[in-house]
Length: 204
Image (cartoon, rainbow, N blue to C red; front, side, top):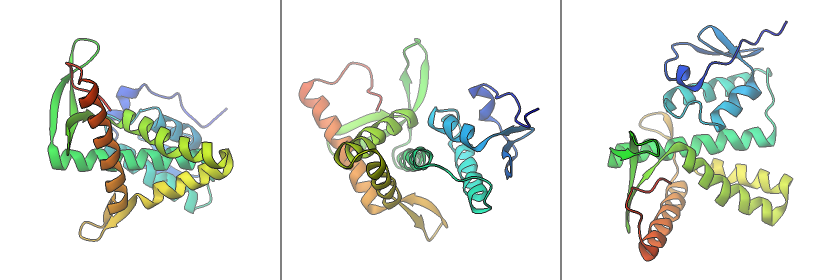
C-alpha cells in the first residue's frame, strides 16, 4: 500500500502546524504528500490562502532535493519559481499598499492585495500573478527558443527576479524583478485606462 495519504481539500491547507521533508514526500501534519503532487498543488492554488505555508513547503521541497530524495523536472522548477516570484510580489505589495475588500463572482467579498502604480491601482491575486508570469515569461521564452531551451531560460529569468534581503535574511524581489513586474502591471493598467476600466475592481 502507498505511504501517501488521501489529499485534503484546499481549505484544510490554511492551518498546518508541521511541514517536513522526508524521503517519501512532504509531511503536512499527519499527512504525507509526494513531492510531485505538492508542487502541483502549489501551482493549482492550494496554498494561496496561506502563502506562508507555501513558502515553508518550498523550503522543504528544496531540502528534499538537497538530500537527494527528489529531483524536480524543468516543468516542476518552473512551477516552483513562478509560485515564488508571485508570492514575493504579493507580499511586497501587501506591505506597501495594504489590502482592500473586493466583490467576488459569487456575490461575496474577498480580501485582495492592492497594487498602486504610475497609472492607477488594481487588485492582485497569487493565481492571476502566476498566470501572467507564465504568459509573459515562459510563454514568450518557449515561443522564441522552443520548449526545452525556452523553459530553461524562463527559470533563469525567474531566478534573476529574486534576491536575498541582507537585513532580514529572507528572499525578496530583486531590483530587476521589481522593475519588470512594475512595468508589466503599469502597462496593463494603462491599457485598461485607455479602453475603460470595468466598474468592479480588476483582478490581475
